[in-house]
Image (cartoon, rainbow, N blue to C red; front, top):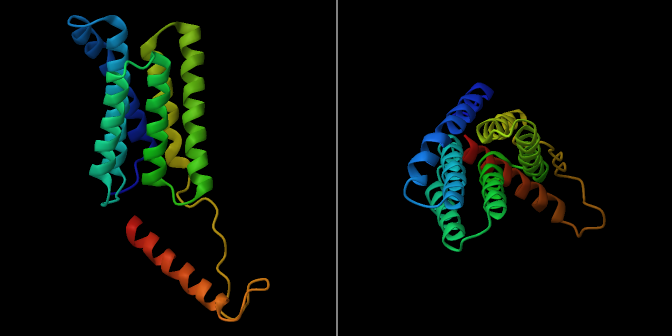
Length: 193
């Protein structure tokens, strides 16, 4: 699978923001209002996580992570977490899954978290200005669509040449270290490819 595009992310944001209203109305007929909003947050977060995992291209661990995310979200719903805690849980799971699926460096994973924080800020600003939950959701996921602009491997250290020893390391460590870096590079390119 190929990495998602910005346009695809914008379309996902539109679908998620427009699908919340019918979901809220249907569920609100049978249960209370606050539980409806918690269920809506859980459904949107899980749908977005499934989208991220399906488009990631990684073959191993997708089903396990999807089930783990569903279990965590359902546990939050069953434990009757506060609404803001459910929001924070959903955003944290989105960040974790996106970091797993699309980041190969710590810097890239941190930037993924920054996109989540910016999305929360945008959603709060829009909701504070307009009072519309649909526009707030749209704004959050619209900012999330920009994650495709973050390179998977943001900073890459140059490999140490085979003949160079590493600052005071015993002989033989440098070549072993270089061989390990090359092996890891081959593994990450195979997993990503």
